[in-house]
Image: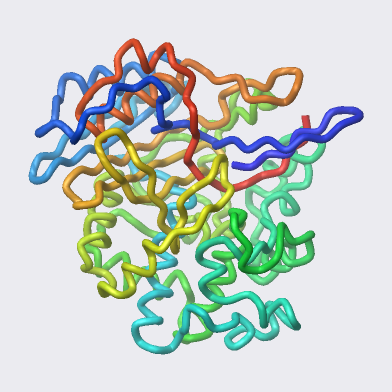
Length: 422
């Protein structure tokens, strides 16, 4: 999440992520490859350590070949102490972007969309004029369009250091066109096609409008029929109401201490983010989805290769971002996937290059860190415990005391950007 922090006389830009699950650890040992198998006891202990560090609830699934482990620790409701469970349905935020990108690439394979065609060819009234001629479909999907994010303008109280607009918009029904206009009316973050790109949810709302134009169907309907069902997912959907369908946790937002005690935003209109981040899923479904994608079961080899052509994108760090997909390199190898954050919930889903090792995890409390007097994020014990669990789940090896002692050197999780004022 990109955050603008302003003092009385100066402004600073600070790039942070809504969650630091899976951060790279500067002093972590570097095994040559992931250990074979799953150390279930170690995974259970490491997951519990995240809860013990202050996370209300966390649930995860790890796969290694034919082996699967899943676990949960903590509570889904701090008032009743109802426990979290591994199979809970969860708001996955920007992981939705991978699904949307797959749907667009299916249309590329059918010849109805060209990646390097200007978006004005398809949506001349949405992105009009010279801008529409310069911005291509590819630039939308890899965040080099430099169209500003709509989220800050849609939640203006964040610019005054208040969560009021989060409450005001809880049941508001936005249109995609309305939100796209907010992004287009804001100052561009750069020239179209320039790198590094700048992560913007608005890009994927436009991608949703593109899908509707070329398929003649609602974007959510098309993605459900041609991506979710094709992948064989049973608990993944675009919610039709503000409620999460199925057994789920509450979603607690702290907003860096401005919301104290943390407030539950699990009931929230999905219209503010739609094809950029409104889907729900389970950790099992997410692992199934990315395995199917990376094994070529949802799109062809040529389209998957396009997804994996990366450029640097600024999003809480510098991401190696493709088309709705990014990678980072762990000590045990390269992992592909995406992260997601909405108010009160964050998610991470990553898969090894060969598709054998996978991990997905969800948490039910976000922006639990504090800010210092200079507007810098003060890392929380949750961050270190999460990093240790992530590396254990991915690489099969605990980083132990080194992970607890080292400061995370990089936070590679691109989630929904919000501008806030200290």
